[in-house]
Length: 130
Image (tube, rainbow, N blue to C red; front, top):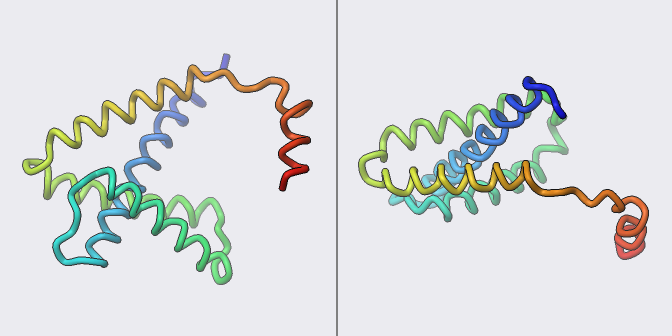
């Protein structure tokens, strides 16, 4: 059984990263179009696209250390907070639904049983395929 600090940090960083991705999606959609998207699903996809693009380009110039990642993800989280404050009245139901879905995925990530035999059977086959 993991200790309480590791579970708390897992909960905190799960939600922190999830909402930071949406914050970057909102920022990226603002960059692409003046009339930015308010659909939270699309903002999540835009955020993943932006984070992947940034990672592919920046790792050649900047080392991605823990400090760099914490600062970068914090900026995305603060973008989400700014987006949440400015658009709460317009899409309050979507934010609540997003929170419920996030909680559902978090609980399911705690309940999923890992494959104990992965290293014996599945890893060798996946390694052969790649």
